[in-house]
Length: 158
Image 1 (tube, rainbow, N blue to C red):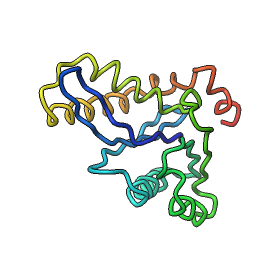
Image 2: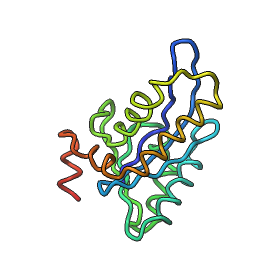
Image 3: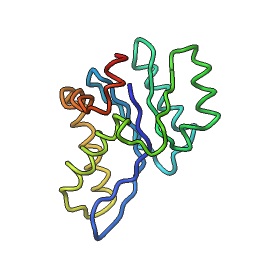
């Protein structure tokens, strides 16, 4: 599975509602996500990783961007303590094209939420959750994210 970063969402020109979301996708089309209340911390990210490990029969390979939580000592120590069940791969800074989860955020933010008139944070929460659940029900679409030519490094390893 590839993991994305906590990602603030911009919903309209008139108002701004921020939300932290974490997701992980697999080349087989699986999508897991979590909505994070407040600031993303190493502990919250580790909890997400624990859920990924519980949900998978084999090892989990996470592709991480340069978010400070992803680089934290606590996250590295947790991954090291899993005995190879969780392996972290960090992509270079400023290279979103190498992060498969960027397609999740594009789909949620631009293709779904960006087309809606947002009236408040509750509606924003409902729309983002609905968009992520929709993607969970469309594994063919998630698999398609890996067709991006920048992601051949993942397909070669799969």
